[in-house]
Image 1: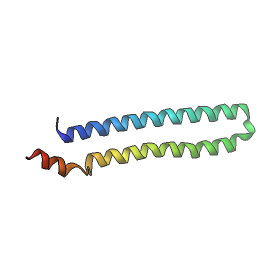
Image 2 (image 1 turned 90 degrees about the horizontal axis):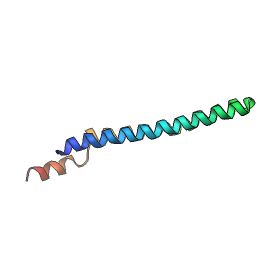
Image 3 (image 1 turned 60 degrees about the horizontal axis):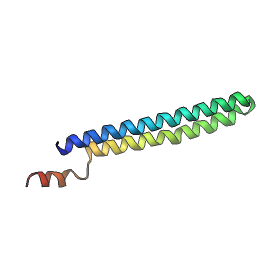
Image 4 (image 1 turned 135 degrees about the horizontal axis):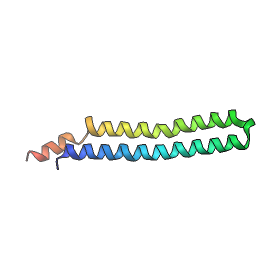
Length: 88
């Protein structure tokens, strides 16, 4: 298979795994926050604020994965080296 085809496969798999992990993490965070509010409704403000900060940190993982996938697809640092080896 060509290098660029493998690059697309790697970017797709990376996005899939990164999104899967992010989704699981966010689901667990929201589950725990809802359980905490159910146990102590008076602390809902602090719990929700902490949950939102945590969700932002978890979401940054998906953004990092997206950036790496875009680098693999469009600004791959190995493109010239691979093309040089392919033309030999």
